[in-house]
Length: 243
Image 1 (cartoon, one colour):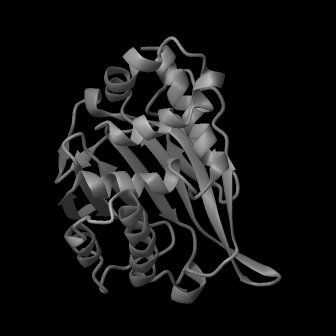
Image 2 (tube, rainbow, N blue to C red):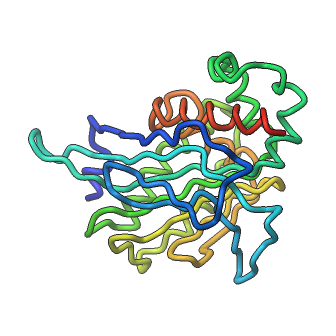
């Protein structure tokens, strides 16, 4: 599994949520990622260290996808499904004044829009759901560390990699990742990257550089899925229109 996680080529499939009506979203609604059949809640309530945050901190689903890795020429494995969430009020406060007057179609084609989404201290979450048996935590750790190191170096060649070392240290070998395991990566407005596996927080790193590098994997240059990135952009742009 470790080898196949890093092997190319890989395919990333995305499910388009379409134009979401954000005022009408309900906690009982779910979006189904079609390639895996995995459901994701439309609204994600933050629960950290056993404490439920208020509805004002809830995040809204803006994109889903799945990652399929080819093991051999004729066989592939759907490794995980993922969902991307953002905090509506945070988006409106940070991006509304600049982008509210721009149409959704124009906004999604604006490269600066994604850069601002990464640069501004907006609460957001990527949720992964493991879709195969035999996944090893070291494989997850190695794949993320490799991509994060490259993105940190590209953003700032003089960056301090201590944040990356701290992030990797949380993935201990004894953490099981059975089929259906939920992994959350949360970015807070304060610049923390919080990692949760199976509902338990395993670590938090205070580094805005690491936060931006992590979410750059999904909405930055050469993302995990261009199609899902476009979906995220359209839905965040629509969200701004409701501010």
